[in-house]
Amino acid sequence: MLSLYPYRFNMETIRQKQIGEIIRRNVSIVLSSEGSYIYGDALVTVTNVMVSPDMSQAKVYVSVYNTEEKQAVVLMLEDQLVRIRQALAHRIKKHVRRIPEIYFYLDDTLDEMYRLNNLFDKLEAEDQLGHNRPPDDDDE
Picture 1 (spheres, rainbow, N blue to C red):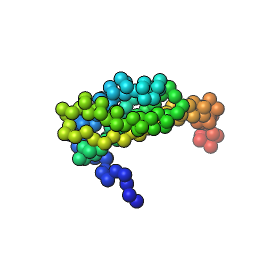
Picture 2 (cartoon, rainbow, N blue to C red):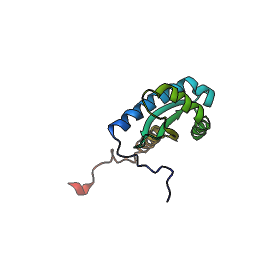
Picture 3 (cartoon, helix red, strand yellow):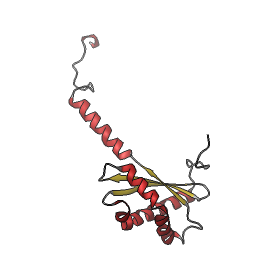
Picture 4 (cartoon, rainbow, N blue to C red):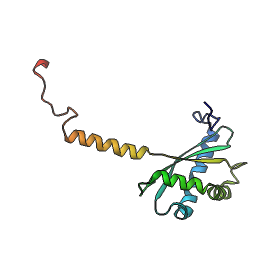
C-alpha cells in the first residue's frame, strides 16, 4: 500500500517539535486574519502540527466550530492552500530554510469527547451504569 506521506510522523525530534509549534502559532494567526475570507463565520482553531523529519511536510490539525459542515471548511482551506502557504512563508521565513508543504486534517477529538459525555449522561439518567443498584443477596 503506497502512502501519500513516505515519512513517519510518530517520533518527533526536538527540532521537529519546535518547527511544528512555530507553524501552529503562525497558521493560527494567518487563519484569524484571513479566515473570514476563506470559510466565512466558522471558528477554526489549529490544535496540532506534525512535521516530517526532513521538515518538508506539515500535517496541520484543525478543530472547526460554529458550523455543521466541518469537512467543507477543511476543503475550503485546501482550496486556498497557496494563499495560506504564502502568508505563512512571509511570517516564518526567518525560522526555516524552506516552507513545508501543508496538509489540513480535521481534528474532531473535542466533538468526540462531547458525544461520549452526552452518552454517559444519558446512560446515567437511565440508571444503566450500575451505580445505584442495591447489593445482591449472594454478596453477604
